[in-house]
Image 1 (cartoon, helix red, strand yellow):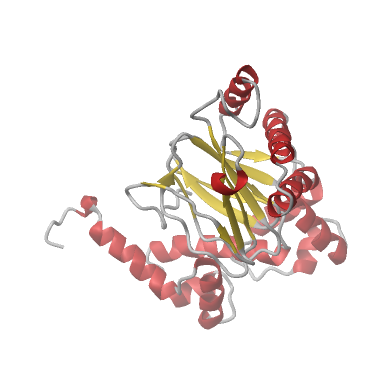
Image 2: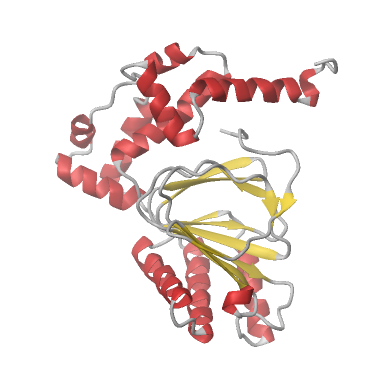
Length: 311
């Protein structure tokens, strides 16, 4: 699905500034003093976050690693849902954006690598720096599955160093290790799910309009309910109920955009009441269904392809 709900037609060049709060950390080159590392950031969402508009990072890779939950990105006309244990890569000067960030109990880490000067990059010698940059370009995909436990430990170590002693050489060394592992995983894709979790995901997607019962899904997966909950979260990065809600809201947005009423949308997706549907919808989109429908209508009316210049 090509969901451009939060995409502006024109992109901006993004500029991050120093910030440290309980929820978000931005450390720039001014704080880190590591050549080629333009930014290191951490997000620990306490509430759903509004989407970022379409933007670029001039001469810089931006790599985001999601530890748990899901994060939605958009680039080159395509949406990417990045689950826990996966990284999203935006390439230098490539317009990209995010959708709403749902509630998640774990961190999202990201950093920007300025490649404008390979002669002065992560304390590496120029030939090795150029080779590493070429290898990053060679990944040729935006989402890479990794070994969640291993990469989370690397990112946590970088974060702890950034927030503590700030040993520049150690931080740069762990960034390089992360990049080498990312390149490796891009060539040897990690399979996040197992057969039983694949069965669960397939069952959920096939029956997404129904009132899904976790005990029945666990039975379809041939697991006990406690085993199912633990394994599902371990392999997908989110709880079964959160996954179901995300998929239901994605489906509901299609229905609403195509003219289905809010009440009928709630009924088709087996929500008990339209009020409860509206509550869940707003949690994941920051909009009520009515606001979402109005937003879609306004975008259609404002579109140059609408054919009526008087509107």
